Length: 112
Length: 114
Image 1: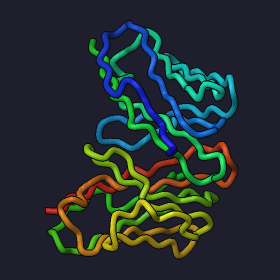
Image 2 (image 1 turned 30 degrees about the vertical axis):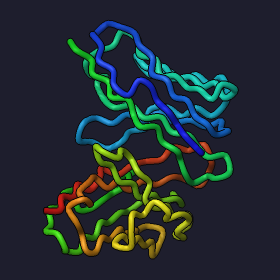
Image 3 (image 1 turned 180 degrees about the horizontal axis):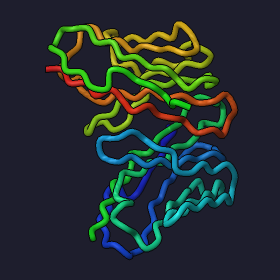
Image 4 (image 1 turned 90 degrees about the horizontal axis):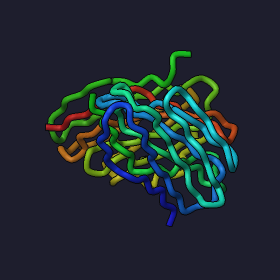
């Protein structure tokens, strides 16, 4: 069964702290995507990781991909309240260009 | 680029009524997706089209749901008759042909069936 598992599913943290969200997947894939969703809003693309060892950074967020371990991480550095959102990872099915398999999402709350 | 455009943004309807949701994908994108999102079930893929052809509709909950894509710039998702359990946010999304491209989501249609 094709599965994408995120953990934790819920994370409450203080501003200024560092933390990592994990995304494990069961299918062979070298394409992984991270999205952000604010409450009541749509999903916004954050990162596209297209190869083993890929690392992307934007501000306080950094995403990496290890295709051998079938693991991606989203690292938050010195969290700020504005990063509070739900973060989703999704994986391309290798035999299809059309469909992504989604994780359940990680709801991140950053307290001032 | 205007992005993926959905309408209506919000709809409240009575049980039994027909609901039609509309989507205009980003020009040049050849894959189109309809997703449903609820607190209980999260994000679910209902159906996706490639070059206007439905590829996989296994996520469509039941026969009350139907989707069409008559041309590359327009798609509809219809629910007939609607039920309260259909209340959700329905997202349309599109994607370019090349692999490794992200999916772009519309703002969503917030449906409430009372």
